[in-house]
Image (cartoon, rainbow, N blue to C red):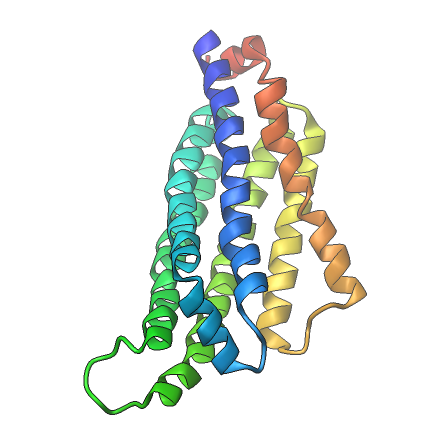
Length: 233
Protein backbone atom coordinates (compact mmCIF):
# COMPACT_ATOMS: atom_id res chain seq x y z
CA UNK A 1 0.00 0.00 0.00
CA UNK A 2 2.86 2.37 0.72
CA UNK A 3 4.32 1.70 -2.73
CA UNK A 4 1.53 3.67 -4.41
CA UNK A 5 2.34 6.66 -2.21
CA UNK A 6 5.99 6.38 -3.24
CA UNK A 7 4.81 6.30 -6.85
CA UNK A 8 2.78 9.46 -6.25
CA UNK A 9 5.75 11.28 -4.74
CA UNK A 10 8.08 10.18 -7.52
CA UNK A 11 5.51 11.34 -10.08
CA UNK A 12 5.28 14.75 -8.41
CA UNK A 13 9.06 15.06 -8.31
CA UNK A 14 9.49 14.14 -11.97
CA UNK A 15 6.69 16.51 -12.97
CA UNK A 16 8.38 19.38 -11.15
CA UNK A 17 11.83 18.54 -12.53
CA UNK A 18 10.50 18.73 -16.09
CA UNK A 19 9.32 22.32 -15.65
CA UNK A 20 12.74 24.09 -15.80
CA UNK A 21 13.76 22.00 -18.82
CA UNK A 22 10.55 22.99 -20.61
CA UNK A 23 11.02 26.66 -19.72
CA UNK A 24 14.61 26.56 -20.93
CA UNK A 25 13.77 25.11 -24.34
CA UNK A 26 10.46 26.85 -25.05
CA UNK A 27 10.91 30.27 -23.43
CA UNK A 28 14.54 31.03 -22.55
CA UNK A 29 16.20 30.09 -25.86
CA UNK A 30 13.79 32.09 -28.09
CA UNK A 31 13.88 35.13 -25.79
CA UNK A 32 17.69 35.06 -25.70
CA UNK A 33 18.65 34.27 -29.29
CA UNK A 34 15.77 35.28 -31.56
CA UNK A 35 15.38 38.86 -32.79
CA UNK A 36 11.97 39.38 -34.46
CA UNK A 37 12.26 40.90 -37.92
CA UNK A 38 16.04 40.52 -38.07
CA UNK A 39 17.01 37.25 -39.76
CA UNK A 40 20.73 38.05 -39.94
CA UNK A 41 21.09 38.88 -36.24
CA UNK A 42 19.04 35.83 -35.27
CA UNK A 43 21.18 33.56 -37.46
CA UNK A 44 24.37 35.07 -36.05
CA UNK A 45 23.09 34.57 -32.50
CA UNK A 46 22.37 30.92 -33.26
CA UNK A 47 25.84 30.48 -34.77
CA UNK A 48 27.61 32.12 -31.83
CA UNK A 49 25.52 30.15 -29.32
CA UNK A 50 25.20 26.87 -31.22
CA UNK A 51 25.95 24.68 -28.14
CA UNK A 52 23.26 26.53 -26.18
CA UNK A 53 20.81 26.18 -29.07
CA UNK A 54 21.50 22.44 -29.31
CA UNK A 55 21.09 22.15 -25.55
CA UNK A 56 17.64 23.70 -25.93
CA UNK A 57 16.73 21.04 -28.50
CA UNK A 58 17.98 18.22 -26.29
CA UNK A 59 16.13 19.73 -23.34
CA UNK A 60 12.86 19.71 -25.30
CA UNK A 61 13.38 16.06 -26.29
CA UNK A 62 14.23 15.12 -22.71
CA UNK A 63 10.99 16.67 -21.48
CA UNK A 64 8.97 14.51 -23.87
CA UNK A 65 10.62 11.35 -22.56
CA UNK A 66 9.76 12.55 -19.07
CA UNK A 67 6.15 13.13 -20.11
CA UNK A 68 5.81 9.49 -21.19
CA UNK A 69 7.03 8.25 -17.81
CA UNK A 70 4.91 10.75 -15.87
CA UNK A 71 1.64 9.99 -17.64
CA UNK A 72 2.11 6.24 -17.19
CA UNK A 73 2.78 6.73 -13.48
CA UNK A 74 -0.31 8.94 -13.21
CA UNK A 75 -2.32 6.24 -14.94
CA UNK A 76 -1.34 3.74 -12.26
CA UNK A 77 -2.44 6.21 -9.58
CA UNK A 78 -5.70 7.45 -11.10
CA UNK A 79 -7.09 4.42 -12.96
CA UNK A 80 -9.06 3.17 -9.90
CA UNK A 81 -11.25 6.29 -10.24
CA UNK A 82 -12.20 5.66 -13.87
CA UNK A 83 -10.08 3.53 -16.19
CA UNK A 84 -11.55 4.98 -19.40
CA UNK A 85 -10.86 8.56 -18.37
CA UNK A 86 -7.37 7.58 -17.27
CA UNK A 87 -6.76 6.03 -20.70
CA UNK A 88 -7.99 9.23 -22.35
CA UNK A 89 -5.47 11.19 -20.28
CA UNK A 90 -2.68 8.88 -21.46
CA UNK A 91 -3.76 9.08 -25.12
CA UNK A 92 -3.84 12.90 -25.18
CA UNK A 93 -0.35 13.13 -23.68
CA UNK A 94 1.14 10.42 -25.89
CA UNK A 95 -0.25 12.15 -29.01
CA UNK A 96 1.62 15.33 -28.07
CA UNK A 97 4.97 13.58 -27.69
CA UNK A 98 5.75 12.74 -31.37
CA UNK A 99 4.40 16.14 -32.46
CA UNK A 100 6.80 17.92 -30.13
CA UNK A 101 9.78 15.70 -30.87
CA UNK A 102 9.43 15.90 -34.66
CA UNK A 103 8.91 19.65 -34.30
CA UNK A 104 12.51 19.97 -33.12
CA UNK A 105 13.58 19.19 -36.69
CA UNK A 106 12.57 22.78 -37.48
CA UNK A 107 15.13 23.99 -34.95
CA UNK A 108 17.79 21.76 -36.51
CA UNK A 109 16.91 23.20 -39.93
CA UNK A 110 17.31 26.73 -38.54
CA UNK A 111 20.67 25.75 -37.06
CA UNK A 112 21.97 24.20 -40.28
CA UNK A 113 20.81 27.16 -42.38
CA UNK A 114 22.45 29.60 -39.97
CA UNK A 115 25.73 27.72 -40.26
CA UNK A 116 25.42 27.33 -44.04
CA UNK A 117 25.38 23.55 -43.72
CA UNK A 118 23.25 22.84 -46.80
CA UNK A 119 23.87 20.60 -49.79
CA UNK A 120 24.40 22.15 -53.18
CA UNK A 121 24.91 25.76 -54.17
CA UNK A 122 21.32 26.84 -54.77
CA UNK A 123 21.37 29.20 -51.78
CA UNK A 124 23.83 31.93 -50.91
CA UNK A 125 24.80 32.60 -47.31
CA UNK A 126 22.34 35.48 -46.99
CA UNK A 127 19.57 33.43 -48.57
CA UNK A 128 20.18 30.59 -46.12
CA UNK A 129 20.05 32.99 -43.20
CA UNK A 130 16.88 34.52 -44.61
CA UNK A 131 15.13 31.15 -44.27
CA UNK A 132 16.00 30.81 -40.59
CA UNK A 133 12.95 32.77 -39.34
CA UNK A 134 10.68 30.56 -41.44
CA UNK A 135 11.76 27.41 -39.61
CA UNK A 136 11.70 29.16 -36.26
CA UNK A 137 8.13 30.27 -36.97
CA UNK A 138 7.22 26.71 -38.00
CA UNK A 139 8.67 25.50 -34.71
CA UNK A 140 6.60 28.04 -32.79
CA UNK A 141 3.43 26.90 -34.55
CA UNK A 142 4.37 23.29 -33.86
CA UNK A 143 4.48 24.16 -30.16
CA UNK A 144 1.00 25.69 -30.44
CA UNK A 145 -0.33 22.49 -32.01
CA UNK A 146 1.27 20.40 -29.27
CA UNK A 147 -0.16 22.80 -26.67
CA UNK A 148 -3.67 21.75 -27.69
CA UNK A 149 -2.90 18.25 -26.43
CA UNK A 150 -0.97 19.59 -23.43
CA UNK A 151 -4.25 21.21 -22.50
CA UNK A 152 -6.52 18.29 -23.37
CA UNK A 153 -4.71 15.78 -21.15
CA UNK A 154 -5.21 18.05 -18.15
CA UNK A 155 -9.01 17.84 -18.28
CA UNK A 156 -9.42 14.07 -17.73
CA UNK A 157 -6.60 14.22 -15.19
CA UNK A 158 -8.30 17.07 -13.35
CA UNK A 159 -11.64 15.27 -13.48
CA UNK A 160 -10.08 12.10 -12.03
CA UNK A 161 -8.43 14.08 -9.24
CA UNK A 162 -11.72 15.87 -8.52
CA UNK A 163 -13.70 12.61 -8.39
CA UNK A 164 -11.15 10.70 -6.35
CA UNK A 165 -11.44 10.30 -2.60
CA UNK A 166 -7.70 10.06 -2.07
CA UNK A 167 -6.77 13.53 -3.39
CA UNK A 168 -8.22 16.99 -2.64
CA UNK A 169 -10.66 18.46 -5.13
CA UNK A 170 -8.99 21.86 -5.54
CA UNK A 171 -6.03 20.61 -7.64
CA UNK A 172 -8.54 18.84 -9.88
CA UNK A 173 -10.45 22.06 -10.46
CA UNK A 174 -7.24 23.97 -11.16
CA UNK A 175 -6.13 21.33 -13.68
CA UNK A 176 -9.41 21.61 -15.58
CA UNK A 177 -9.10 25.41 -15.56
CA UNK A 178 -5.52 25.08 -16.85
CA UNK A 179 -6.84 22.89 -19.67
CA UNK A 180 -9.16 25.71 -20.73
CA UNK A 181 -6.24 28.14 -20.53
CA UNK A 182 -4.07 26.06 -22.84
CA UNK A 183 -6.87 25.54 -25.36
CA UNK A 184 -8.01 29.16 -25.47
CA UNK A 185 -4.48 30.49 -25.74
CA UNK A 186 -3.42 27.99 -28.44
CA UNK A 187 -6.52 28.39 -30.59
CA UNK A 188 -6.46 32.18 -30.36
CA UNK A 189 -2.79 32.30 -31.36
CA UNK A 190 -3.45 29.97 -34.30
CA UNK A 191 -6.46 31.96 -35.51
CA UNK A 192 -5.27 35.46 -34.65
CA UNK A 193 -1.59 36.18 -35.44
CA UNK A 194 -1.85 39.55 -33.67
CA UNK A 195 -3.09 37.87 -30.47
CA UNK A 196 -0.26 38.62 -28.06
CA UNK A 197 0.33 40.69 -24.95
CA UNK A 198 -3.34 41.41 -24.28
CA UNK A 199 -4.95 41.42 -20.84
CA UNK A 200 -6.90 38.34 -21.87
CA UNK A 201 -3.70 36.50 -22.77
CA UNK A 202 -2.24 37.42 -19.38
CA UNK A 203 -5.30 36.10 -17.56
CA UNK A 204 -5.16 32.86 -19.53
CA UNK A 205 -1.46 32.54 -18.72
CA UNK A 206 -2.15 32.92 -15.01
CA UNK A 207 -4.54 29.96 -15.07
CA UNK A 208 -1.68 27.74 -16.21
CA UNK A 209 -0.04 28.12 -12.82
CA UNK A 210 -2.84 25.93 -11.50
CA UNK A 211 -1.02 23.04 -13.13
CA UNK A 212 1.81 23.48 -10.62
CA UNK A 213 -0.35 22.81 -7.56
CA UNK A 214 -0.98 19.15 -8.36
CA UNK A 215 2.64 17.89 -8.67
CA UNK A 216 3.68 19.80 -5.55
CA UNK A 217 0.77 18.21 -3.68
CA UNK A 218 1.84 14.75 -4.87
CA UNK A 219 5.43 15.37 -3.82
CA UNK A 220 4.72 16.90 -0.42
CA UNK A 221 1.46 15.27 0.68
CA UNK A 222 1.16 12.18 -1.49
CA UNK A 223 -2.22 10.44 -1.55
CA UNK A 224 -4.55 8.93 1.02
CA UNK A 225 -3.47 5.31 0.68
CA UNK A 226 -6.39 3.83 2.60
CA UNK A 227 -8.96 5.53 0.38
CA UNK A 228 -6.99 4.61 -2.76
CA UNK A 229 -7.00 0.99 -1.63
CA UNK A 230 -10.78 1.04 -1.18
CA UNK A 231 -11.27 2.29 -4.74
CA UNK A 232 -9.23 -0.61 -6.10
CA UNK A 233 -11.34 -3.23 -4.35
